[in-house]
Length: 190
Image (cartoon, rainbow, N blue to C red; front, side, top):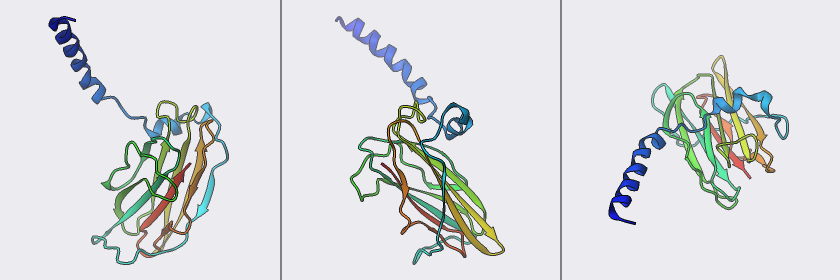
């Protein structure tokens, strides 16, 4: 190839970079909006979270931090979608690299008000272009409720895709602090 052709091709490819950079990631609203388009592998499972407390957990006055640990045991990268409330301290990892059990692959945190009811929804999928079809996809939804000055929480977990996914949580390390509403959630996609 001549130098002119190489320069022309390089300039053409570089002109595409801004449009690639602006390409939107598959958002959770797309997954939830088309519920009639797919059927979950199994019904949504709801787990009542135990009350717990992080020893030495510091919070700013009036705020607390929800911490989410995610273990990717699929053997391939997974990609997030989420609808999160609060101020992000650490955003969900994208992509989330696989690790071997029992390792955690990534963590993210959201700062929220103390004694504030909140819903945090996120998923990880092996196929961002088709999370409910040719993919392994796990969706988790944390619901923190407040009654008077006592916090409690549930975690909804749903599996999607036709690649044989196993979604789970580590119940020994997942809890909601009943006095501050601080949550720690450990989820697993496999």
